[in-house]
Amino acid sequence: NSEVSNGVTDFPFVPIIDGAFFDELPIESLRNGNFKKTSILMGSNTEEGYWFIMYFLPNLFRREENILITRDQFEMAVRQLFPYFNELILQAIMFQYTDWLDPQDGAKNRNALDKMVGDYHFTCNVNEFANFYSEAGNNVYMYYFKHRGTGNKWPKWMGTLHGDEISFLFGQPLNPNYRDYTEAEQDLSRQMMTYWGNFIRTGNPSEGDHRSYAKIKWPLYTPQSKEYLILDVEESGVGRGPRLKECAFWKSFVPQLVKHSEDKNSKGPEICPSSAGNNMDTLTAANINAATPSSGHINKLLQVATPLLLVAALALP
Image 1 (cartoon, helix red, strand yellow):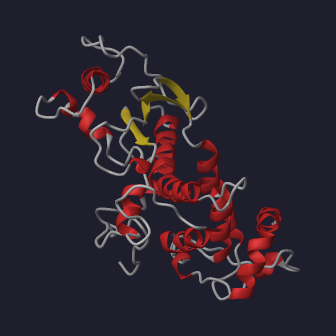
Image 2 (cartoon, helix red, strand yellow):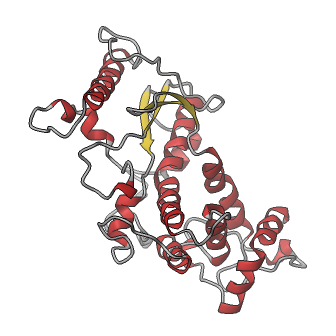
């Protein structure tokens, strides 16, 4: 495979479409309904990105408390985390994830980097996968894990990391060798094991012989309801989403920007191109890696005119 995977979740060896074992991209299989029809239980955590960013940008994200990210560091990090996007899309990402009440807030800039990586690489893909499976008539049960364990050794600002639910799912809080867990965390672990066990036995996490800890009925996820179960010590119940606005940005808005971006050799996007239909070149997943940043003066223009550019891009035919 001539394509090179890069960015924060880089993998040195990846599956390829060989025409024999894999004959189409997974997303095409989902769109075409070429997958096993079965019930699934799936979900994501609140801070999906930090664990990967820690190893990808170790000079900025050190394993210590009170890490703050300046605005310049934020913009640099976005470009390093998403090297396959052109400048217009990078500016859109920065715009979407900036807290405009205080763009210089170091903690909010830090958290925004976690959220953009987590949304793009994990949460929004989980949501999309759930939509495809549900639309095909399968029972889908979605969770959103929000609890940070009391024994978590990572800095507190990192929150609930990718994979943090696993220790609760396999009963670590109930192991007497681990004494950092509270009684409430032990109950959460029992609750999760009950849900998963019921699902394995019956196909429904809320039904089975072991219901004592499955106190909240786990709703079916559908593309219309988008309901998920919140797994947390302090907050329990049913939510909707998660991250709906952010996932609409990645799954709907960004593809439109990609479609209407100029070709990779362009000096920069025009706000109102005279012949958009002739001058625009559609970027695909295969050639998006080749998109190059604009020149310095174009970058300055984009920083000022980003809202206009985004609106104009959507207005193009």
